[in-house]
Length: 336
Image (spheres, one colour):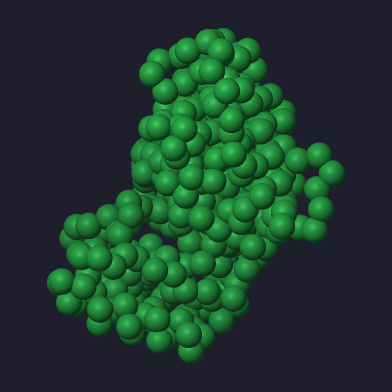
């Protein structure tokens, strides 16, 4: 089975396996029936070590044959923990993973880096933020992980009847536009869901996780963050004119300078390691080989420039509270 993804017409991907994998979690709404000439091709198949054993050695894990970088870890004759990257600096990229590497290697970081590099060719970049439309007014909400973005979003969705959720934690940002990335909403035991309508399955799952994670012995082996589907799978664009940054501290709200806001968003986005152009050492090695043809530092500069330009016409505020439930009320008061 082949999985074809079209991310807002910006990047197209053809993969042998679903990309609903850890960290990447490409939403199913991006699935399409067919793609004529994908930007990224992902194949899962055995990679014969004999095919690159004569290639030039690069470091202790890589070999280069002039157009493809091979990764080979462990005992290849037994496990074949291998991958190959080709054309990462070009318009068309091929990623090949052995079945064992797909299961145990850093697949999501290599794929995430590739997606980010291709997005930058369209002057857009993934950022760590939520995007929501409240009665027709688009806003961004950002902050470090576990700061309360999801609780704030769910509270606002339940308060405003004509609201849309474009993204919970990842937005594809351009210089004056935000593209939706509607993955399932991340939820932890501390998440306040407000009055938001959830499916019976999501309600049961949340109750189960909340109880399980209060048991120390069990919680040590259980992921402390799950997800719920709000059935708001939106493929669309928004034009936020306000942005709110959440942080711990005494209750209050204050305006932020656009340059400071850009720095906060960029720094917060650095926590999205899987969507950074340099998120895997294989990508750094590929860049090293390409020299001036592929400069990861320039990619980071470009990412920062996109964020800086976006905030040129956006009102920014910093909200502080020691209680996650208070963020939403401050935003409601600000919007009213």
